[in-house]
Image 1 (cartoon, helix red, strand yellow):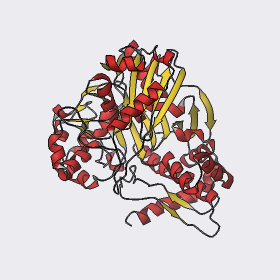
Image 2 (cartoon, one colour):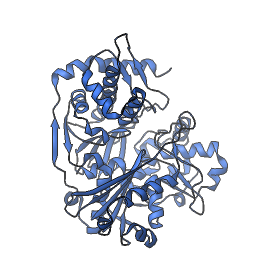
Image 3 (cartoon, helix red, strand yellow):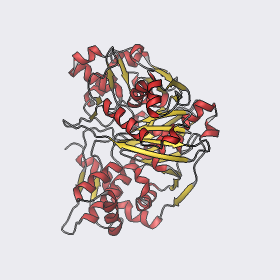
Image 4 (tube, one colour):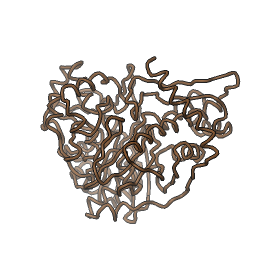
Length: 479
């Protein structure tokens, strides 16, 4: 049995996977995000640990006793600042925090080779600009920083006593030379840091530590190996068997991602495409990233006084392109292709016949249109995509899938276990760390439960709205 733990933004999920790769049990615990100021998004690292323990201890005790290894996945980019005693100095600044947008330009000016070194444009979601912000606005705290860890790696520290990070997660800091798979001294120096503040680097399938005896006893397990793990998107890809050149998936979690595994490092920073290391050796990946995806459904459901299932049902009753209503899903700003932390969401083209169902339909369409922009940026970088595996909480809606397939002009595959993709991937990385199996053997693709082909008639109905959507971004971005 292998334990996979995913420290997400809205919750922590834990899964147990058998030696045959089958999902044996799962549990979760919720997390909240603090938004005390405009553009801010923070969490208390102590909450990650509490949610991790709650999720793990909710798994069946008899299965926990059989665990041979643990893997970690987690939300990327979060700046967890530790003092000399490894105590958090402040709440962690999260991936969807936009306060450091000015520091991005300053960082690239301070190190003009930044995009060439990292393969990525500086974005406020990345970790390095967050440290530049702390250096400027909280100098007393910056002076005490001795270690910077990503969310899952802080949980690893409490689990094992080890400071380590895998390459897929480290790539999202903007301190990594992704082609060389090593920290960049030049990028660290641009933030007045050096390697002593960084965890050691490991591949996601390497052993990165051993579960502490006291934690193991509390969890009813042996002191088993803990794998390097992965950032959530790379972990989700591993969970779905996306470990070969050209393998692609669509993640519909809190954020939305189109992920493509690549056998070579293929950056396209000028279009805000993410180019990172994969969590398996000698592989990289590209991503288009949208800061709000399934979170738009949660938001819309709250406004409508219903739950997500009711919101989706209202959208389905209204039907795609039921009215002129347009939704811009930029609730936390946007990354690909705009790299715009300041733009915000909007409903447009409302009229006297607008009703909750048509608004709900517009939300589903708006997220699909944003993904179309991101997919266009990937294709512009020379990446061909004809099929996408679908993972994340949003994968439960086949109605939304029909809209996405039509707008993106791709075939969607819904795979077994897609709703727990990152945690499943973490468990597979644990298996690789323990057994030494290669990714090709341990990361087989789950069974296809459903396939959605693009509907040309639906695509034709939605095409005019996509063009209006693109014009609408240009119209509102400076407001």
